[in-house]
Length: 398
Image (cartoon, rainbow, N blue to C red; front, top):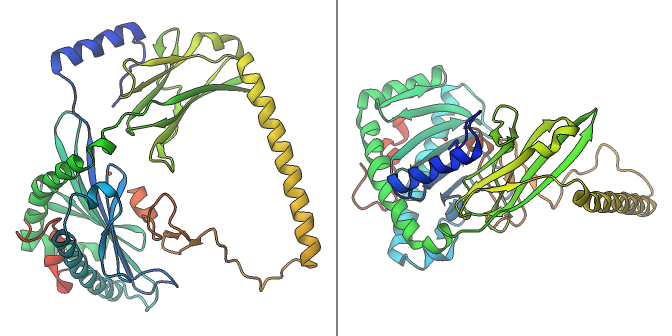
């Protein structure tokens, strides 16, 4: 959201934000609804041919795969507010989508002149309600872990990634109905269901958990790297900035992504390189919905000495334990496995198309995780609950 500008002193910024809050009213909570579809032509052992998952604000709400042939809830606040008819309808939609995606895989294999084997076809679509109340939506497809085609809903046209996708682009734009249907879905049906889902899970989705902030420093080559880490906060949006003498140091600040913890909260960090003698001029500013006002945090070298020493001690113990464990293992094994040894591990299986299958589906997510392609990328029949405009295309529609 960008709450700071280079050269703006912190007190003036705080006053400006306060005035904006008073005059403009409190901003509403941003929310998102996402659906991910993945079809695999020749999956490995334990991997379904087809998987769909739905997310509200990053929370997995439902799951379908070709093995169970059922769409099922994944959070209590969805299950408690929906009936059997809802899930039967959702299952019907997913089953039809599975058949369409299987046909699309065959069409694409022939179009790219590929041999039979493992190929993947994916779809990602969804909508957002932003803090200012505005909405947005997107719909895009990927093949073999790469972009294939995406909808520009404002112009009702499609962006094709290659010559094979151009064929689909021409078909969909000539027919015209798919773009219109999807635009309507993203701007109306999707938003309506997002708001409904949010009302179901309001206690979870609109809760506030304050970040625990820690500032540390590490000196190397006469440069001191100050690190500001925020842990355990919810909701996800957060702003972490470094100030020097009260002024935002935007260009000098390095930030990491805001990522989820296993308990449903998030963590984030920001670092800055400074001269060791100037460390007392810097403060980390953290802004979050759970805080009544932005928090300011400074590095205190003496207070950081104990955890640093403790960390080194723990690391030494860990290394010793690892070496001892290796020695015991080797004594039992007698010989190191040769090239014919197995690389399998109970920790999970890396799949060639950017999927990872976990033995127990960590974080409460089903075994088949969201494809990496999704992470790299940002109407309907009246009886449909979620709606899936693409299923009306059929096998020949691609």
